[in-house]
Figure 1: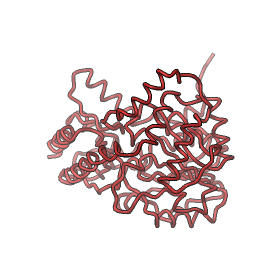
Figure 2: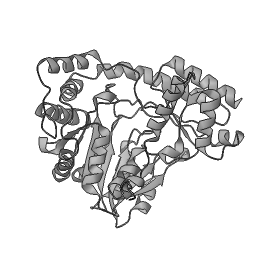
Figure 3: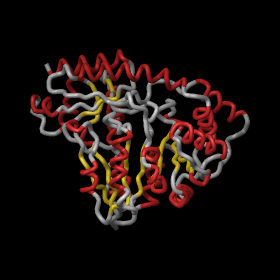
Figure 4: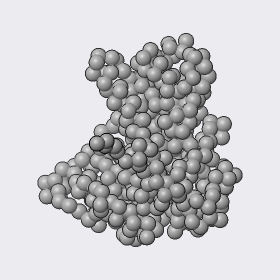
Length: 393
């Protein structure tokens, strides 16, 4: 008897960022002095007032099941957040709280896509988007926007990628892995294309909204394109901005029919998010963003240092980002200098010779680049750059 897993599972790959992090941990355990710049996780602790809220919830006995779609208190805090930060109005039946931003995106794919439906994904992209589409039996359609166009797709590229099978589009701004962010005018230009195609849902990932330092204020897609409000799913979470990665709370606001379908998917997979994490997230979203401002000062300083330092390394070309905590240099010239045909080979070379773990750009749909997370201390960043510089010199 021959047993096998489903074709659905065989179509997808494990998360490359998690694989790099795991490999770095294995090498450290074996005695190697590995610097890991793979994981996108703030090195700051969760702010104390948020932790205190979780402790209070535990002591109050708030440790039971909640509504599948989130507690009324957290949904109201999310509604208030969307109104205050993004000028977006939602009702409770338009809000879904999930176990992390990744589940929000997965729920959306499962609720929207039928076999053969296409989902447009601007590249470089967050590693999980294409595989989520594949798990939902959809077809990922990638649009490449390299360093030469600031890692942002054009309206012309978008129009050319749309077919009669296009059902969904992901848009991540500020972007993981590039740090690039669309301006309001750029969002409106993309929206003008999408207005002509009423069957497309736009799933906007605003996870790095508050880790942002561009001169122009952050603008969410639905705010820039109010005519597309009924077709926009605005996704966010507390993981990055509030250093709450392990608390696993993501959320979204969108059309009632879609949120209802996503809730149904969630009810048969994870059910409700962790009750204690929800209580903590109420305070995170309601107590002001002073704690974010403190972290942002450090992220911006690290960004400025790292971009300048990478441009001093032979074969590296890096542009400034508008936010997040990633740098995404073009290393194609460095690869050629070292005789590496693939960015995975170059990543392995840096791991073995510099003992620095990076994620190759091919994991993000952009071969020839590397993602470096600067969600770590300046001291560690300086040492990592020095090691890479020695190898390339």
